Length: 121
Image (cartoon, rainbow, N blue to C red; front, side, top):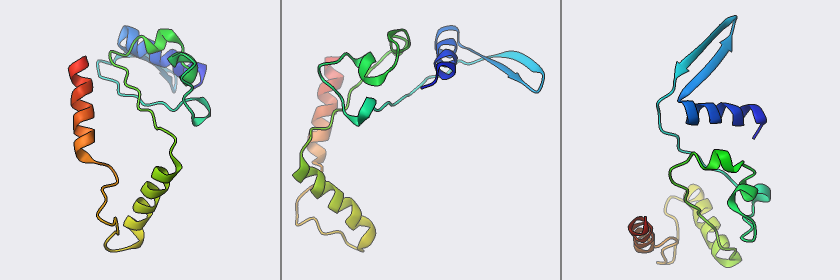
């Protein structure tokens, strides 16, 4: 993320305004809205030994502006990744994807996980 982008995000999240300078017009607009953001770690791999700001290359001052941070970590498992990839590709190559009766992502697990995390907040 560039320094200019960081500066704009700081202004929006801290002062709830956006400064615009275009075509000789300089103005400040109100920016009262919610921000939902997603970020990938540096090198596309989350390092559990590093703090969140270093993994995302974002300053702590910007991260602290978010009310809720939720990490979604992918466990490295080649067999599971291959099965999921084959299923996704099969959705577009065949009329009826073959899953051999196996759920790729178990909806009950997702529901339990989300409810469990919500209860801990």
